Image 1 (tube, helix red, strand yellow):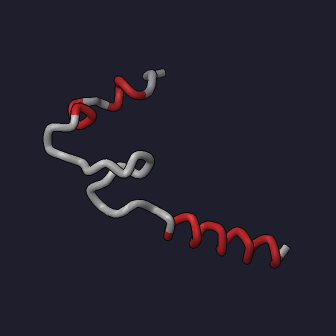
Image 2 (cartoon, one colour):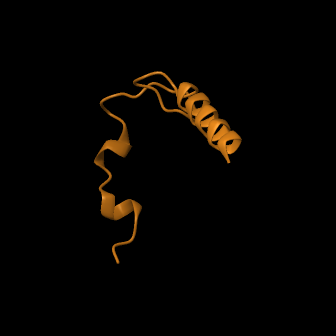
Image 3 (spheres, one colour):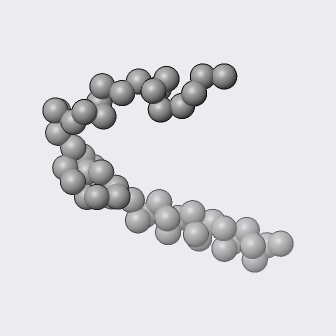
Length: 50
């Protein structure tokens, strides 16, 4: 049990360290700009309201 906890904490630390740099999209690596069309998207457009 203790080994799994240590492995989970190590994996979480490693994964958060692998994030992209600020002002860049993580998948493509493209720079974020003020004219990006995604800035106009609302939460309701991304996920259905139940």
